[in-house]
Each structure stands twice: as structure tokens, then as C-alpha cells.
Length: 149
Ligand SMILES: *[C@@H]1O[C@H](CO)[C@@H](O)[C@H](O)[C@H]1NC(C)=O
Image (tube, rainbow, N blue to C red):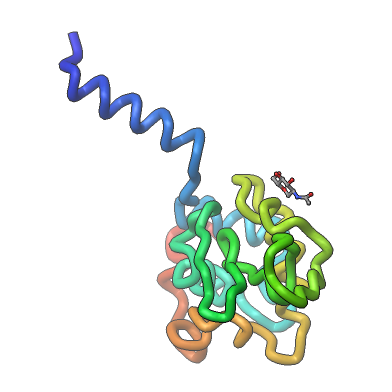
């Protein structure tokens, strides 16, 4: 028989798989490639992977509150000032035309479509500080190594 501690640990594991999802690196790399991200707007798959790593740690449910009162959502930390509507950020643009909570599901199709919109802006991938500080101009091969992509 399992001990009570073991049962509690198993229960926690089960809950974690339902309520949150952190993508495994190569699984995410394959999904991004399948969605045409490799080379999209001039950015490599390594750029997208590195950006997602530093922005969210590949966590689909990442939420961060910014000092200006806006909030960043999901695996690409998309912001409620410009890109999605959370119905509480003043003067929101909602350029992706979506409810921000759609960016927190484990199906990242909505996130990918909106990220493509973000990167087409003049700032390109510099819209993401995580990319600007940690990925720009770096050797990014480690982010896709061994993934067969
Ligand atoms: C946004 O999505 C959330 C979660 O599905 C929902 O609870 C909320 O009512 C939505 N907001 C609007 C205004 O549609």
C-alpha cells in the first residue's frame, strides 16, 4: 500500500497535469516548427524557443503583472496593453482581438497566431525583453538541440 505521503504526492502530480502545463523543450520546438515559426519574419526556431524560455519557462499558464498596470499572459507573455483584452487594462489596443485568458490554455494555437502579429510590428522580436537580453545575437542551438527539427 502507498503511504499517505505517497498518495498526497500522486494526487499533486495528477492535479498538476490538469491545471498547468510546462511544455517539454523538444515538444514545443516541434509544435512551433509545425506552425511555421522557423524563419517567420526572419526569426529562427532558436529565437522563438529562447524567447519562450526566458519569458515563461515554456509555461502556458504564466502570468506576470507589469508596473504600468498591464499583464503578460502565457507561454509568450503577451501583453494586455497592446495585444489582448483582459477588461481591466486602461486604453488597451487588443490588436490580436482576443480575450487574454485564451492565451493561458494548453493549446497554444492562439498564442502562436498572436505572437506572429506581435513580431510583425516595427520592433520585431525586441518587443520581448527576454529575447532582447538573453537571445539576441547569441548561439541559440542549445534550444533546439536533439529535437530533430
Ligand atoms: C474572458 O475569458 C474568461 C475565461 O474563459 C471568461 O471567464 C471571461 O468571461 C471572458 N471575458 C469576456 C468579457 O468575454
